[in-house]
Amino acid sequence: MEVQRNFFIFAFLFVSFLLWQAWKSQLFLSNNTNEKTGSTLNFIETQKDKNQIFIKNDVISLVVNMYGGDIEEANLLAYKDQLHSSKPLKLLETTSDFVYQVQSGLIGKDGSDSLINNTRPMYIAKKKFFVLEDSQKELRVPIKWINKNGIIYTKTFILKPKRYDIQVEYDIFNPTKDILEMNMFGQIKQTINLPKNRNLYSKNFALQTFRGAAYSTINNKYEKYEFDSISHHKNLHILTKNGWIAMLQQYFAVAWIPNDNIIGENTIYTSSIDHGVAVIGYKSPAFYILPYSSSCIKSKLWIGPEIQKEMKLVAPNLDLTVDYGWLWFLSQPLFQLLTVLYNIIGNWGFSIIAITFLMKAITYPLTKAQYVSMIKMRTLQPKIKEIKESFKNDKKRISQEIIALYKKEKINPLGGLFPIFIQMPIFLSLYYMLIGSVELRHAPFLLWISDLSSQDPYYVLPIIMGLTMFVIQKTSSTSNITDPIQKKIMNFMPVIFTIFFLWFPSGLVLYYIVSNIVTIIQQKFIFSNLKQ
Image (tube, rainbow, N blue to C red; front, top):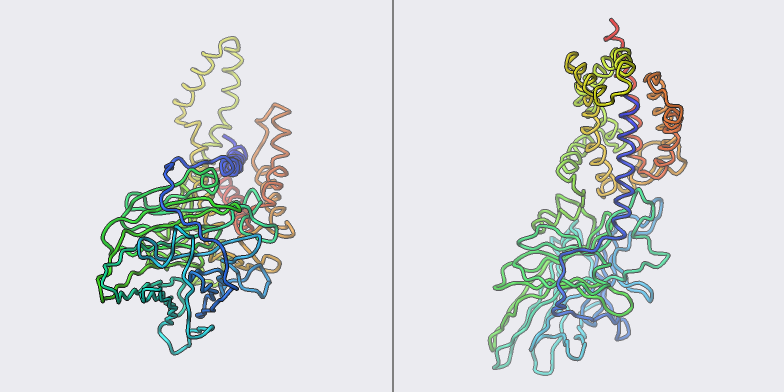
């Protein structure tokens, strides 16, 4: 089997896989649905004259609407909105044409939030601005509401230094003689159709990632749930102990993690409401506050980048939101190895080059076996030609004689394909890693390559990659290809795949260039040794 044929089979399979993924993302509807709508909470209005407070630590700033105490805006201070921009990335916002916000409250017979009247409490705070100082270990932001019966509801946001997880606590003081009953809920809502100025999802077929809802239960570690399913009213209604709910986009996540110490099961639900807004949320089991006593219920909230090592500490399986697809078992250790190299080298681009050398060194025995098999196959071509001429009217006999020849010479005709099936998962794993790891977002390499996770803006790397493919093709003999159409297709392959690679992440193209250069060197080295 010729090297260049294997090479192009690999490239063709990879591009075909990407096209299939893009097509599937448009048609997929999750099967894990239930027509029950559960307790869906349709609070959305940003009413009551936008009475807001502002909360900030060193990595995130929040805007909270005092009507309901919902988080209507969140800015990630350590991440820029776009490459070379001075503005921080705005993850949550509430505008006239786009809603992405986090809501929570207390519902039920004695809750502060009414499902019947669709009303929220108007909280009050001692001041408008709350900032975590350098000397503080945590920032507590209490907001308070007292109902007509004198019941005091205190909602507290707790932020810590350099942390994206936020504790949300409800303290309820019951001064009455009655037993109070209520449930806590937490939900995330987002407009399904993005406005033109909102860049959450790449239209580049090679850089498409998941945008939608996700959840985790005691029986299901991680499950994505399409906005399309929610908009078609195929809603979730799942009872579970522990778990979490989230909304995801490339590199960033917003998630609610309910309190796992409460007795009973949480209800995970989805719904769609007016104006094309998708909702995923949870409702806690009922809890009770005895007369003349107080009680506290807690929940965690993640608003930030998908940093695996930090998310893993916040909730079990939350790190799985860094979705490496079906090759996660390769992508995760590959990313850990890349991180180790980055800590040594200090540049993600050179780390990719280093990991390429490591991968090529590991697969060198397979590469050598491939070339040896290729040389043996070439030496058999005259004998194969004789067999075809001798039994030209008997195709079955030709096949039998060729197989017998392979057995006699101890050649596996499929041996050249084995390295392809080893290299392709590594290549795809690196692809998923580059488009899914926030650490590589806006990561510079050299000169004009200022973001290894996006395409080369000047298409220089794809052109270099095409040239290396052309060199591999020319240094591998094509004399055995007699069909003129097939030969013409082979000659056009470097051009075809250069065009495809124009849209691939520049870090992936860099990997492929280095891999091709090493392949050329290995090829010359092995051939020279075989001729001796």
